[in-house]
Length: 412
Image (cartoon, rainbow, N blue to C red; front, side, top):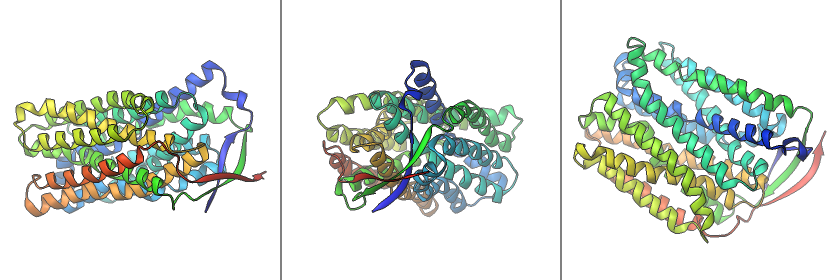
C-alpha cells in the first residue's frame, strides 16, 4: 500500500469559468512544450560537445542517458511534493529549477554540464507525472483533447530544439554554450505565465490524504508501465542518437537536425490524433501494436534505406513514435478509475518505465563504441519495439487497474 497527499481543489467553482479553463489548459500545454528541449538540444550538438569538452563515446552515452535515468528516479516524488505544497506550486518550482538547470549547461564545464542536465531531468520527471493527473482532475470531460494537446506540445518542444539548436549555435558565432543555455529562457517565461495559477489557488486547496492500494501488484498496471518504458526507450534513442546516426550516414549537421525536427513535428500531429482514435475504439490493443510496427520499421529505414528517402522515413517514424507517446499517456488515464489512481499509475509507469527507457540510448552508445557503427542498433530497435508491442496489446484491454484509492484523514 502507498499513501500520499493529493492536492485537490476545495471549491470546484474556482475553475469552472470558460476563460479560466482556457487559460489553465493553455498553460499546461506551454509547460509541456518545455519538457523535451533538454534531450534534443544536446543531441543536435553532440559531436561539438564531444570535440570541445573531449568527451569519450562512453561519456556521451552517459550524457544522453542521464536525463532519462532522472525521469525514473524522481518521478515517484511528484505526488509527495504535490501533496505537501499543492500541484500548482510544485509545477512552479519545477519550471524555475528547470530554467536554472538548463542554463547551467551553458557553462564551459563538464561537471556543470552533467549537474545541469541532472537537475533539469529531475524537474522534467516531476512535470511529466503531474500533467496527466492535472488533466484527469481539471479536464475530466476533455481527456482526449487535452492529452493530445500536451503530448503534441512535448513533441513540438523536442522538434524545435532538434531543428534550431545547431542554427542557433552558428548564429551565436559558434558558441555551443549559448546554444545549450538559450533553452532556459522559454522555461523562465512559462514560469511567469504559470504564476497566476499559484496565486489564484492560494487558500483554495485542501490537502487530503488518500491511500492507493494494490497498484504494484496489479498485472495490468505492469503492462501499462512496460508499454510506457519500452516505447520511451525507442523515443529517447531518437532524441539522443538520430542526429548523430544521420550525420554518420553522410548528412550535414543542419540537414540531419532538420530531418529529426520534421520527424518530431509529425509526432506532434500524431499526438493530437491518436488519443481520439484510442478513446473511440472498444480497446486500444491493435492501435498500440500497429504504432510499434510503424515506429520500428521507420527507424530501420533511417538506418539502412538510401539517403534520398530520409524524409519519407522521418515522417513515417514521426507518425509511429508520436502515436506511441500519446497512446502510452492515454492508457494511463483510461486504465485509472480516478485522478488519485491516475497520479500513482503515472508515477509508477514513469518511474519504472523511464529507468527501463534509459537502457535504450545507453545501449546505442555501447553498440556504436563496440562496433564503430550504428548498424547493430537495428537489432536493439526490433527488440524494444517487440516488447512494447506485447505490453501495448495487453495494456490496451478495456479494464481498470485493480488499484483502489481511499480517503483517509484530512490534513489541516
